[in-house]
Length: 446
Image (cartoon, rainbow, N blue to C red):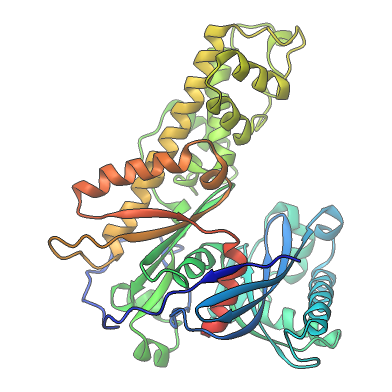
């Protein structure tokens, strides 16, 4: 069992009215999606909630309590979504989710965090595509190849109905109050503790961002499915930007970018993500090393995996970049990718080039990330008044942002440079367990 105590500041005393903001420019129909989250956290939320995070690799369930000015992680468990789970049919998968939730509720009842037999408020972070229809419902879209067995059985079904019916079948009483994606959860999680937070960004295997915006700046067509009463009552909303899809025709590309795009399942679908995410920057770096260092070597002298599609991992790039001693950096690379001819088959000069290539690719990713964050701030956030030095806090999470050597520092440096020229002061803040906290905050607010 894990516990945590985080102080929560009181809400800002500033007026809730929002200044008029020009509508953002034309964008893809599948981007800038209202999240149906209008009631935003104040830091004064109270109560105990269960948060369910259905991610690509793990199911995490937590019991959290809000007791201003503190919030507590009472209990936290994680189960891998291994092949046995991913091969379940849709109904069996949701019954398995309900059974895991039931086990957590037994612990919560035993510890007195929830009343035995009472209906428990739930928040869900659903890290897969969802055609959201309300704050607590949405139609399931394709979950990806790894989840084809599950998805084929429940495609276009309502997530809320599936979840609540499976819980009812096991006698588990829940009130599903909110469904959010992982980028919205990131923003909500940090906004709950810092009201200056207006943007949430994920840079990991995938890339996305969410932004808190005045409703007045959202295109009317995007609001057509929203509850008119909610639109009248609230001044702000959270947008799921689907940032990964931006950049086509704008971001300059190399021949390796073109090659990667052509090999993609959906060419041109996620140009931003293909320059930034851990999955793609590693493949770009592999292309460069393949065509420069390894091209003229016999196959036996090529490090294992570097001649295979997606054979290089971003974590390896990070290890190599981090080592100042080039000899030790070579040992780190060859420990993961040994050559048939031995560990010394890469020369020092070759290794220097490889490390420089890794750094160039990751630095460009950091620059593109910073440019994307600033573009969101300029496009949809209210303009700052002259001399305004207030910081805009950007909540960040994801394996690349948190674990890649020096990546977050470089993003911040680029933000400082670009933002200073445009009157924006943006500060990155790492948000741990954001999918857990964000789901719970969404449930508490709604």
